[in-house]
Length: 472
Ligand SMILES: [Fe+2]
Ligand SMILES: [Fe+2]
Image (cartoon, rainbow, N blue to C red; front, side, top):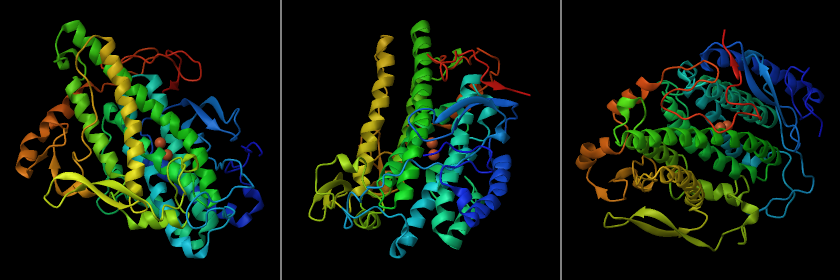
């Protein structure tokens, strides 16, 4: 597969110049995208940023690093290499050749899946728009912008599919993706977590750890799709996505490290006065971002998702590594539920209907790895405190637990008790105000804000004190 031609208006590895109609359609969407980026993308003015740009999808050199003025960033269209022998790996079409076109009967469902995924990409850019003004270091500022340009590219990835395979409806959906906005009253983003604010850097790290990780699992199911162009798009997006989660994982590492060090140094849990974030506040932010991200997986049972699986539109996480029959027509599974007597429990359902639960469980296990890692940092400083994931029923607004309230331990409580106690589990206005008060920009080379430890390593082998961003 050829290296993308960066002299083209829209760099791509899909032979765009051979389809003039499609090329013209995308070139007419491009100025709208750039207008959106100018008005809704990163607000902090910069001269240039040390960014990686995808140039081809091969194992070597798919990413090139350079200082780039952000408005000159080249958002391209990249699909992973085509496997000409690829076959559908699950559902009723299992064993048939993967589809190179959209079958008419699945057109509406596939379009919907692509639109929902596409909607999250620009949403996160909008949520993170103002963070540049309070970056704790140039290194962090650079990582923020890297995540932002790649989410912009992920929007391009979905818009390419809409334009290339869904005709006029697809073009209209592509316009809508720029018209909806995160948190807007009239036309909000489709999914709840993408209408929440990301007002500070602790939220940003939690978002990239927990919510980008939801993205990883959703992309993982779409990567299995029988519709091959969707599969190939998601495969490449997943490579970029791993950097976003790295930003979250190591960001929280560094906050925990700084907090723990001050706790030990001053022999107190109350390190707010020392300009850092108390561990209890970190736990509350974790509780919030984890629980709203669990909601993104949808209801415990879903007949739509059963249909998507059966028809081959969307597979399971690691579909090909599973050892069952990949059809699941006769299988059952247990899902989380509120029992008839109103208790938190489990219910047996057909495996097909429970696929959201299956995916959410893989996600939860993955989230636990981060918590273990942060607890190792606490342990290393000799502190007895630990972080943890709250119970699956805690603070849920979607699915079986939306109607009940539960403590982080999974104890069922009344609505009144919830209202009285939730400030102990979720960030209060006082917590948020404290965190925001720490968010003073450090835009000086090699310097770092007081509430976070410096990273162990820089980006692409550069040191921490590298000039990652040039400000005007
Ligand atoms: Fe993304
Ligand atoms: Fe992401």
